[in-house]
Picture 1 (cartoon, one colour):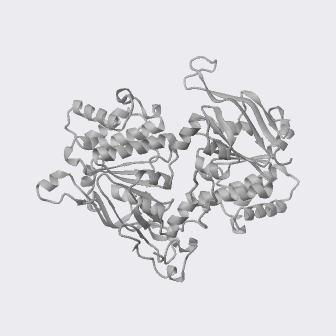
Picture 2 (tube, one colour):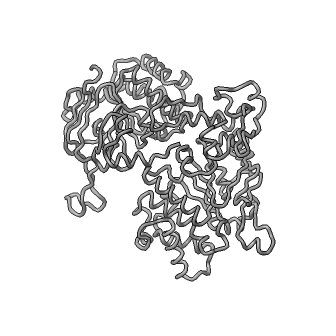
Picture 3 (tube, chains in turn purple, yellow):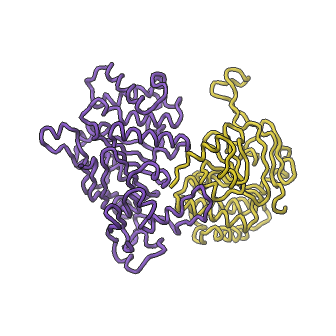
Length: 337
Length: 266
């Protein structure tokens, strides 16, 4: 099966006073329909900049290279054309027609993404109308209710009339999810061809609410064939939500593979370090990773993790290691693999 | 004070706030009980963790215990003295024994002060007899102890990473050698690898300086690493208190069980 999203050698460069930096450096990854790829990294790893590049939301002045192929709906296949598009090459207009329809994004803090002076139902309707300006008002309303229902908003009729500040954090995130899926509901051809990028969507929520949102996302993947790119710093959340994981460090993917393999038998010293540093319910000796993430303006010449690595060798300083296969599905960017 | 003696105790602590729509005369809306009849004891040398979800009242409770918020009702004994009755110089003397570490290392350091002034400021307030030179010497020693070198002194907070700023906040809290340290979500704003460094540092400092910790957190896995005892809060009340092992392994309260079940495990 062709992947829903196929990213190849994506590089993002930003201008700084010290010259150009690369928050995203030669990143390749795939997300299949109905699949969840967990993208793990600490602050400054480039995970958010990567998602903004995919959405065409990079800050002005950013340079982007590489390819990011997003599958189109069935319509493209019927005419014999490949409906895939390189989203990095789209014009602003083409991007607008896809963003919110074929690919959507939800963020950590739903309150800052919602309009505080607009009823939430109207905001979901706006997301539908943006792509279907001629749709009859009645149908727009029906799709809005359906989106709220799919996002498991309780009493959707009542909630639609409320303003964001009247909703709890968990409900606001459900409304964001409803907005993300609403525009595509009107187009059956988009079934199995939609991507949702979720950037730390549960980090600001209580654990009991987090659990509900993670369950909702799992359900929507099944029901709508939604591909999910789930960005988080929390390895526990990744273990719950993802099929496969990519671990980023200083702009590069340093390890990727099935979630069980990467978290169960991590091959990169950074992934091993993150696991050892993550607090668990069993009291054990926490093993922090020494030092801190390098600045993008002062990356070491070889492996970016080398200065903090407990098992470094001389050759690690010479060149950036290639991604090496640990087995057919699991690879790590380390000379020890 | 020797290990195991009660350093801080609270009886019947209560704090309510006006709900939106409430009028000053008490009409128009009900009051919201942020902390509802809480009793607790903190023993010298232990780490009592207060765990709960957002809005449960854990931060209001912690701030009342330091008398940063005045309770509506209740009694607080600190080192055997009635904290709520202290005034003026007596209150200041008690306050130097209790210090706080905050969640957000960006918001809790004055951006216009150099690190040496931030860490030395508690000395300037509580030990006025010290010369500027002596203050600097003590600040350097404390900064070094928390893992920052002398080069940090002349710099401003924005020049440091989140983890380093949290270390500056810890140095400021410890420079007066307090007995009690209230840490409100001290690692939640930090990356995992840096948060682990700060947790280990807090543990080392506890045994080195004989500190007692009141550790406020929403995260059971974090609390599991550091707590001697755990109190679980919900809707302003403590629903369960016990030894850390017991609460984590054999919780009695349904809500504690629910919280534990919701923790995503690696």
